[in-house]
Length: 340
Image (cartoon, rainbow, N blue to C red; front, side):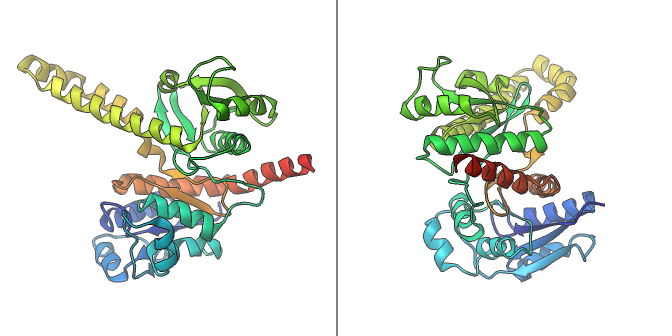
């Protein structure tokens, strides 16, 4: 049997806390025998939610945290001042080795700051990127970075490519994942200063399967498995994807309900349409990990419901069992040794 994975879950983070977090934790322990969940947050509120469910009480534990970091709070100040917040306490569990992973649907800024300051980066990792999966025609591609490092340097993007390749190979089962740098054209001479400087470095990196530039219009087709960029471009891509997807689904529903004929047609195509929509649901694979830290930190959507929370906990189990952090550490250490 695999080693038990201990996951610290921020029960107070997100729009649907603590109900969604608690139900997600219960669903996860019912589905996966190899996980133990620490529900971190205000004990009385969590206990009230837990009373609604039947579960193995030895595998879900409440860790009291009296404070909550709100979405609008300045992240650095919040991490410093709210020492008894669910985010800080949860990350300390990871730092102290009491938990293998931390999951939160709370403040993205606080999670990013806390990951860097409390959990800390693996030695040799210059920046820790946020790496969500993006639905494509071929399945999913990894977008790295989507929000953690706006002013990244070429060396950072090279590390992102290596970490992203390790993730896609070991977690998503993609052999020799194709890596592309997000650009405004396919030609090598295209792009801004960062892309032009990074391109030849990626070509020379033997640990990855670099295939060149990937344009935004090719991303939905799954042109590459790992899309490398700095966080400014990555966040725009991510938000554009989410917005476009929501608009398309809304317009399809509107069209199907526009007349009696379309309503009859909607009944006939509903099963197929449901499967298509599900295939583009990134929550099926959990949240976005902050790669390159000494422990796993995963950020889920602020609007996450119990399903995404559950899948993110299961994602942490896979991450832990596949020893992703150890593989990243070995890769970065080999890089440092070659430089020396």
